[in-house]
Length: 255
Ligand code: SAH
Image (cartoon, rainbow, N blue to C red):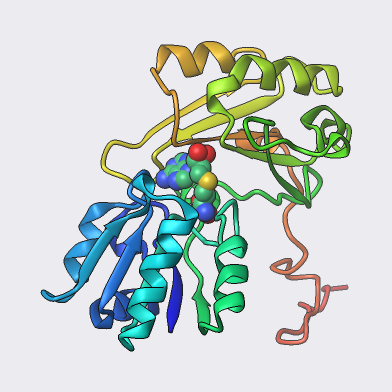
């Protein structure tokens, strides 16, 4: 059995309890060495075989899985954050389907939420934005035209950009061309929840300079929208004393 496990954003205690237990039990770990905190490997048992997938092709990863499966061994495929976001897991699953090897997934804390925690930020503030667009600049992996940052900008929703900090000037251009004003708040979080995390608050206009001055070249998220500075928003109805919910009666107005 192959377990696709989300390692969390970086801090070693941000893996789920289930993920940690799977690491402790497994015979083989294939981990994404470019982003997964290697301290997580301390959970592995002594006889566990460990492979760093940053040096491997998909074919090599699958052949390690196939060989281990043949020996009835358990395999953990450890991906950064949550495997469901830019995880390149589906292509592995399709190969495993082809080979008749069973697999299941264990979620992780995505860096999108690691970064929100680092900034004590809520992506969905009433009257500011109730939607989060998770996307990236086109790189070696193309992005469909209809999903360009420029096209998404027209929504004015909170936007979180993965894999794009190396193209900060293009990000700025696309956001402005798409209709955002130059002074729209933005943030860059480098290695959220790691010991060497960096976080910078800027604006769309100053984004490229903020990235450059802080020497951030990779492993960062760009967050765009007024939720970053949270200067004006409406308080929630859920916790409003005049608003009844399924669990709480409204406070009766005194006449
Ligand atoms: N599955 C991962 C994302 C993998 S794509 C997740 O859920 O987080 C790799 C990209 O994720 C990086 O280029 C960077 O943009 C982002 N990333 C991963 N870990 C990060 C972290 N700790 N802090 C900031 N960005 C991170």
